Length: 196
Image 1 (tube, rainbow, N blue to C red):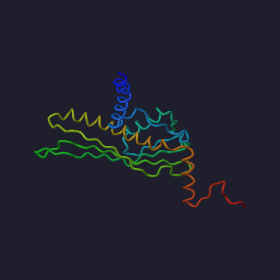
Image 2 (spheres, one colour):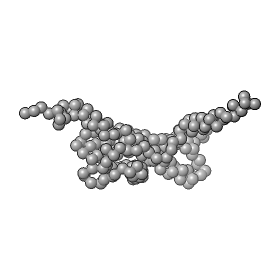
Image 3 (spheres, rainbow, N blue to C red):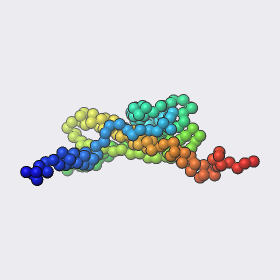
Image 4 (cartoon, one colour):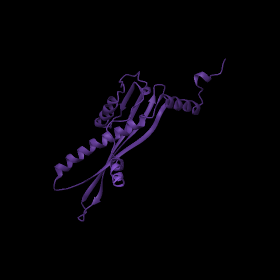
């Protein structure tokens, strides 16, 4: 009998492993963005003309949820600039009657993070998010609502990508980027300046 009970004693571990594998395989992630370093505070967000307010608000909301101090003043330690927003909607599948059966929505935005002393901590970086949906020409209003919901999802995903770009920027990493910038531009750090 002990031989028969052995497989059953391992059953909880096997079930747990299967659940974890299934969750990891489907791309599930716990809600909440990774923490943003206190070294980036206070942080100012500048959304250029053409960047939807929905995206800017989503970024602000996620930063505030992470207890990041945001500033509208010019004395912010860092300025995050969002610009060059582009939105694309293309037919990705066609019916036999040559009508669109599926559309793909794609939103993209440029991100830059610059310190108060004009050091580019994150250079001009393009972030993109896309989603496809089926189109039913007999139910246009429902599909318009679905597209609006997808636009909200795309904005939230872009906001998450932005947070993920900020997450690794610890004080040590920022200092390393600043040193590299000074080295590339031929400037000497203050503590390496030659004595008169």
